[in-house]
Image (cartoon, rainbow, N blue to C red; front, side, top):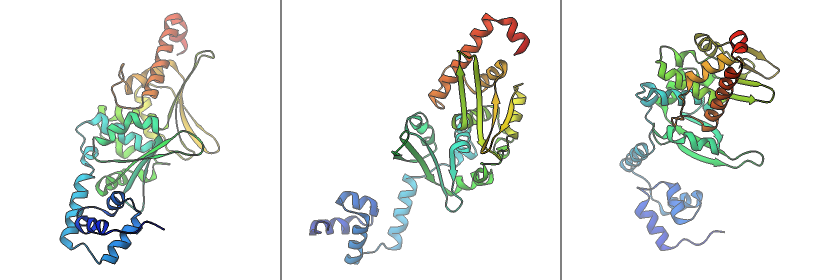
Length: 287
């Protein structure tokens, strides 16, 4: 049983219930939300329409998302990156206006600041019994939710991102594909066995048309493979890997994206260049 309510506690609720949410009241009083709700009911106090509107207005201002950051982007590289990352690892709820992304906490440290450029995205840390700590970042925004839905984000597990990349600038597209690869891509290097691969993975039914169209525009050779549960597009050719890496990245980390993916991409790029210098005849013939 919880501690008894004091006159001081009750006065605090009466003085602040119009300004503070139940969550904040419970934190201030060190009580559960249910206990605070029950006490408010017993005290017979209610929010009038004016107070409800004012509280909603304040919360909206404090926790708002600028959907136009994505719809009419001024910083196209960042907007493109985030939309690519959401396409890979995001979840757009079909029943509410919730939008969220779950990734490892370490990776979130690299890109959280990018999300916050568009408004007040909330983060929650999760420590699973098995695996690395995770962080969820999310928001509720009808305008952004509508925009993502119109561009097939609710069906992204099997559709191609044709709508979101249509008629976009080169800067936006570089960001989008960087974000997509950060979310669902894999950069692999085994120098001992001379293997270097860039894979983009998805569901078995995944439509890869937009991605493969982009690769063709860069003169990249690739193969599409399907197994029992998934499919992926694989790039093993040296020149093709260089073309893709040079397209989505600058030579130095620019603060946009996962540091570990950038580092691995640069490592593969450096390995290929060293091999080309040692064996130019081989790469000119077979690469």
